[in-house]
Structure formats: C-alpha cells, structure tokens
Length: 123
Image 1: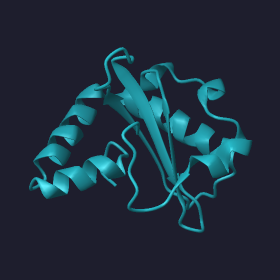
Image 2 (image 1 turned 30 degrees about the vertical axis):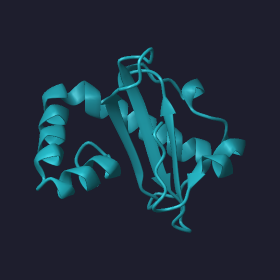
Image 3 (image 1 turned 90 degrees about the horizontal axis):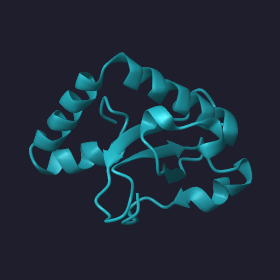
C-alpha cells in the first residue's frame, strides 16, 4: 500500500517503474494535514461500520473521476477482512466531504467483496 492508502495506485505505479506511485505520493503530501485527518476519519468510520479489526487493512484515497458526468473528485475505500477477502466501494464526493452516512450499510459488506485478480471499471 502506498502513502495515499491506495493498493491499486501502487500496483499501477510498479509496472511503470514507480513513476505513477511517486507522483501520487507527492500529490498526497501536497494536500497536507486536513487530507490526512479526513482520511483517518473515513478509515475509522469504515472499521466501525463493517466491524473490522485493528489489523484489517483499510485504504482510503481520493481520485479524479474519468467518467463524463461524474463528480470531479471521488473517494475510493478498500479493505480486507481477517479472511483475506477484499472489499471496495466508492463515494461520489471529495474525501473531505464524506460523512458517516455516505458509507454503505453494514449489511452490504458481502456485496462489496471482490475476489483478487478481478478489477472493475468503476473503482
């Protein structure tokens, strides 16, 4: 996982000699303390909402949308359970604007699961 909290950015960057990952890291550092505070809040809300343990990894990142008609900035949240199952979802708001009610309900946890090796265009 890179400093922005994104597994997928790190994976894409690795295939290009780390350049994309380095640029993502620099952009994250430029955003400063409010970004990191917001990311910490969303990470904690995700842990609480889905009953994750302290060792279950949670990645929160803010990405620019590439889909016409979508908000310019979106928040992508990924987490793994103790069983190693990867889950992810997107909130169509910038990270600083995300509130606890924007997260999916806890009963949707199984629907958010995505097997390793499977990627979707939306997240």
